[in-house]
Length: 394
Image (cartoon, rainbow, N blue to C red):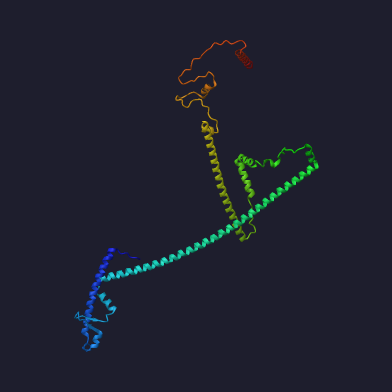
């Protein structure tokens, strides 16, 4: 566990430590002086008289009288002992607390380093496992791509061979038919007939059988598919699935054969799903293209109608445009029925009628028809019709 000390507390502790060091040095110097003085007093007189021994052990400083310096200092243990004796209880507690904190910090740092080392080893092991897994997957992918390329190559080779066989068969049939035709012409004597007529015939023979629908076969098929109902489409789909469905026989297969069969089925399902996805995307694209083409067609029709001064909406509608029987700028509301409005255009002597407006006076003209005119003929026809009706009722 790391211990954090504020800067102010740290400065105060440094000042206290410096004061304590100064006091300890003073106390140490005083204790050394007392110790040297006591030792000098305890030296026997024989040694004092002996000059050589006194020169080896002691030296008197002339500048500082009454102070004796020893060449050999007291041991470290004595100094530490004197220091500990000079410290107070609070200082000893502080030193012990500081030492304990340092030990705890060192232990926490060591634990952190060990934990970090374990984590680093764990991460390195995970990275190694991931790299190995990536390498294994890359190899599997390369193997699958290689197998797929091989299958694709074999499929293309098979299609090419089938195409070549089909073309060869068509050529052989064509040559055989030409040879048969030549034989028939030679037997019948068609060459003589052609020579006598004096020219070639440019009349194209009528196509019979499948040759008549080769040119527009796709259009006919598309029309048939568009004319099919939903039930018929479902039936066609069901029959197609029945034709491509394969029966699976698992009897008599060992465990390895079953595993291989399962792998093959899984690969087939994956391939079919991929084809299904491609077809769905293709269908969506085709629908988008159809919508875009229809919109373009509508825009072209609208532009043509606008150039002609017609209403684009009425021109592009599937229904014929309405007959305008009233002006769109008319402010007065017309309460007439459609037949009354239509009569204005159909009848010769029609008049516009509005609410609360009486019709105009009728203009009578004296007409004297001539005998044998159409008016008399119409009256005679009406009379005959009335007589026939009466006879039928009786």
